[in-house]
Amino acid sequence: MGKSYKKNRRDFDEAVPDETIFVSLSDVYMSDSTWAKLLDRDHGQIEEMRLQFEGGEEMVRVVLRPRFGGGYNVEDGRHRVIAAKLADVGFIEAIIVGS
View 1 (cartoon, rainbow, N blue to C red):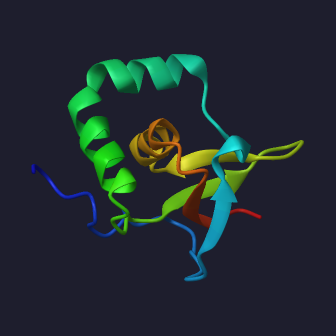
View 2: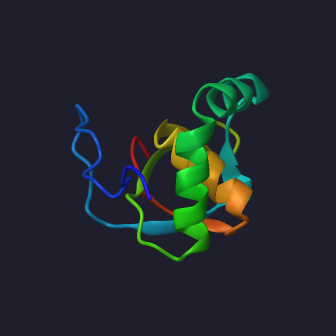
View 3: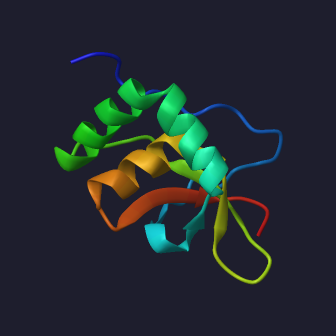
């Protein structure tokens, strides 16, 4: 297959704890316009990630930030979130920042 998406996540300005939690994808928010733009522009990359999720491969954790009123916004990992939702995996490994 093509490129691997199992590399280290990008560095953040704030300290990120090492603890991973599993977050329901139904609690992860992304605007319809962002979803459509990324899927249109990066369909091949997202499709490769979807196949990796469906194959049970270990993926880099996404970074989420709590939303006012509940749920999470994606700080890093929008492509992985879309791929996981398309693969219907239900949950995604995440690091929560700014809580």
